[in-house]
Length: 542
Image 1 (cartoon, rainbow, N blue to C red):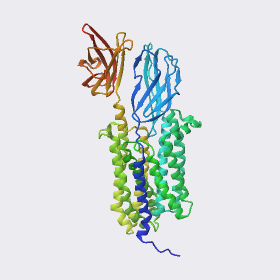
Image 2 (image 1 turned 120 degrees about the vertical axis):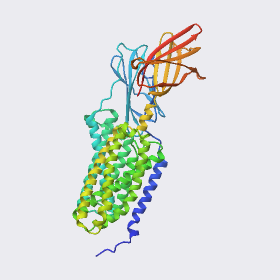
Image 3 (image 1 turned 180 degrees about the vertical axis):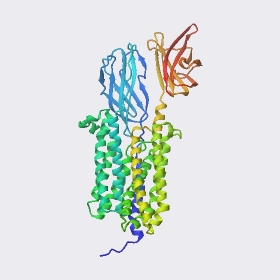
Image 4 (image 1 turned 90 degrees about the horizontal axis):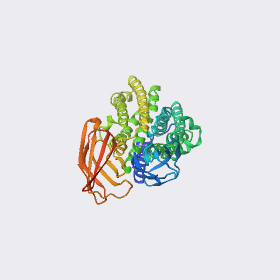
């Protein structure tokens, strides 16, 4: 029996309802999200390079945003290490109880925490008790585990293919057309591969968080750790979306449509649950932007395989399907492009970051591929779509080949975007760059805590707290700061410090033009007849 075609308004009513659901979901994401960002260390006590008279009772790490500790260790002067497992979280500050048997010499405090955007953050700091150890210690350098990094990248790329082409394709065939058996089989393979990738990525995330090698994947701890991070929620939603997409292929049409809608929404929810972009401020704007960007990609990428197969096979449904796609694609492209530009502007913070940071260079590579993709899509729409719809076989063949190239470009974009997993955004780098440089100077007659804000080249302000050599108060009559960089040929620069009501001496309008090791000297006027000079070196970042 031949079916009576539905009116156009009835055919597109489900998609209109879906657009309303997607918009409402994006708004709820913005209203209900918490303010998280890629964490940057802003303060540490004892300060890096500090020399303290007595063993500290505890250590303190303050970050720009809340974190969760993964690995906390103290390397002692003899090279042995102690795990620090007694700590408390106080908003964005991690208070750690120090071991009771700390001796004199140089110690290295190392930490590895997970930020709220799901990315591990690690570092080390050196401090000395009593006096530095003979020869000193060097903070351990974090080596890149390339096998693990490649595995994370490959899993992320495959997950994108499963979500955007697999789930997006099932949604497209359910509401627009092109759901032939070969297309459905390909979508099922992609979704199964994406499901395997998302499950594997949980363990890989745990390995990265704990700084363990790839061989440790057989242990249970990495899987528990990966699931406990914010990426765990992304993995759970993505897995549910992929399962719903697979189930939609095996159930009656109406139930399948409902499952495809849920799976399609799940794509946006999964990507907005964690990651650099979704964790940026302001949360009410960035999470909905990630959501809309993701579902826009899914609709476009999901349409390519059904359209390509239809025109390659010259099926009767090819031309009507192309007409429907041509009417709908502007609706998907508008939020995709607008959200992408918004997120790029927030993440980059400044135009120069586009070529001066690793994150920006990845974005540049993606933009080049996107430009090629948009150019090809424009060619298809304005040069080939009309003739193909009119029945021109040559145009239809060219369109099929062009769509195959589009699929290759989309896969290349997924591979490039997966590299963002390893590149902190410039906004996070800016937060880290604002971290002050700190110096502890300790002599028998006097000691000082010197803080240079920010701790990099350019205009800085200096705060100085002075004490006696036995940590007592020192009521000086005056203080002069003298800075120099002998290696760069910069002679001493003198600035008179002003004492504030909080007993902190301050120097403003000081410019440090070069990075590197600067000599800091304090001329402390203890009395009209006594001038104490203490000095040490401080590292200024580029």
